[in-house]
Length: 278
Image 1 (cartoon, rainbow, N blue to C red):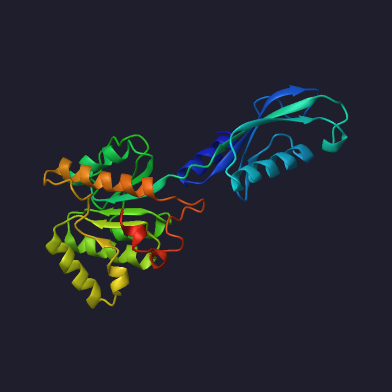
Image 2 (cartoon, rainbow, N blue to C red; image 1 turned 90 degrees about the vertical axis):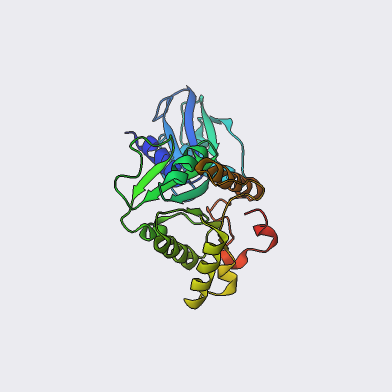
C-alpha cells in the first residue's frame, strides 16, 4: 500500500482531519510526476511530492487550510528560483481538505436492540464501534463503516475510545452495564452516556453510583432510560429508532471540535443548556 494511502486510511480510522495534496499538472521538470500525493495533518506529513521548498510551501498551505477551515482548491506554483528550480514552467497542486470530524458512537451489546440499532447508525454521519464480550454475538457481516470489537470485559475497551464519544450501553447483564457506566464516568470526556433500561433501573444505578462516591454532577450525566422523548414502544426496532433519533440530535446540535472533543474538556464543562438535547 502506498504511504499516502495508508496514511489516509489511518486518518479516517482515527477520525482525524487532513489535507491531501496532489500534483495534477506539470510544466517543466519536477522530482515527482503528476499523481504524486502527500497527506498533511496538523502535525505530520506522509509521503512526498518531491521535497524541497515546493513541498515546504505546500505543507504550510495545507495546515493554513486546516486551521482556518479552508475549502478544496488548486494552486499554481511557478518553478523558478524561489522554489529551487531553474527550468521554468509551473506545477499545479490540488489541495483537498477532509476536515469533517464524525461523532464517535460506541455501542456496547449485540442483543436484539443492538442488532436493530447499529444498521440505523451506520446510515448516519457518525463513526460506529460495536463492542460485545461474547464471541458468537457480533454478526459476521457488519454494516459498512462499522468496526466490530470483541472484548471479554467490555469495560476494558472504554480506555481505547476517542474523546467526545457517545456511549450507548445495552449489554446482556446489569452488572456489565454498571461497570461500563463507571468506566465512562471515570473518563469524564463523553458527549453522551446512555444506558438501556427502565426508569427503575436508572434509579437503582444512580443510587449505586452515589454509594460508590460519584458526585451528583457526575451521576446527572447518566441517561437511563435513553432515547428521544416522544418516541415510545418496547419492541427492539422501536427502541432502536428512539436511540438513533437521540444520536441525530446530538450530532446535529453539537459542534465536534477539531481535536475530537465535543465536551470542551469533559463533563465538568457541560452546561444544563448543552445537555437539553442529549
